[in-house]
Picture 1: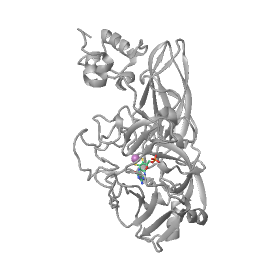
Picture 2: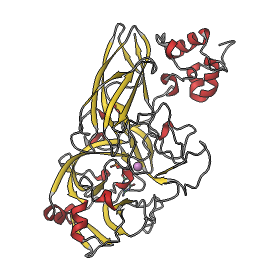
Picture 3: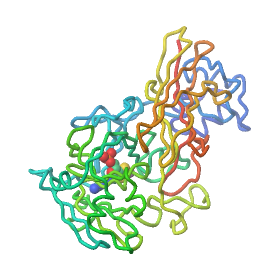
Picture 4: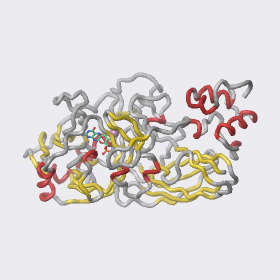
Length: 434
Ligand SMILES: Nc1nc2c(c(=O)[nH]1)N[C@H]1C(S)=C(S)[C@@H](COP(=O)(O)O)O[C@H]1N2
Ligand SMILES: [Mo]
């Protein structure tokens, strides 16, 4: 680093990562000895595996920026990452996802509008099932509970935009890290049972959900979000009309007294404060359908380019992803620490997770973790193991999962799209020993 930098390197990384990279790595991307010392100073320690660092890599400790994320505590919740108040959007820091079954207090929140007033008598809440059915039904929550068998499963629910913040260039929408994921134990009735009770017509192709929340404009005639699930997925036995979360009534913010859970697919299909299921004979056209909404390119487009999404496909299964839940990015360990236990969760939408690997030398070598089978289909899987370190210094724990079809989390977010879906790159947690 020649001359006097006008700002500290960490500030420079925060404000202008490209320029900071040029300073540290040199224009041609080669890591220089002098720059290495500068980078070590910036991350606060020597970098024992610097010789294995891919050229051009921004250390995770710097890429994150100096201040951590803004936090917010909503009633009944742990402190969560504040992505917006209107509508309310809160992300779970990965370290909150350390339970096998996610407690309601640690669930991420994704509202698109304003929640409705809580009902005075939840059992009297009504949902309507109409459209391409022989007998349109109107059922209260009380009737749902008594007329149909109740089942309980651990089910992943992941926002379609989870990981969006990893896209370069930045896309519009909430800049999620990996924390728009929950794995609750949901009790409810099978959507299939209710649809069969109404009698599906031959023409039934998609089922659209409607909720009681209010559009941010305040206009009672505007729908907040209404997305539809293809009929085959609706008939899958883990797709639920859910009535309880972790054995308790669903918390109001998560859609009480009744919501759908369409596990492994974008969370936007899991309609909160459910009032209506409209069985359709064609593609649904509610808000959140079509164009670039919950759709990704079939043929990659130029990152940052405009596209109306006409040739995109709807997202069905979510992508393979992992979280590290016992070590926070930026954690410090006492001098002399040579072994750190690591654990977390991994999931892959419709698939299962076949492996999780961890690296502490910038991806040069990887260690396989132990991965437990899912509690049931669509439950996430817990993984655990340990990492060993050769000395004190700055390290990054890199973690990546592989799905049952052999697809690994990629090195960088791929298949860029205007609304930022499908970013599931390898994750990196910076740690300092000593
Ligand atoms: N009625 C209604 N249902 C909704 C939403 C909403 O804004 N309104 N948001 C959806 C989105 S985008 C997601 S990711 C999940 C989030 O559910 P959670 O807030 O319970 O975690 O709810 C979905 N269901
Ligand atoms: Mo979402």
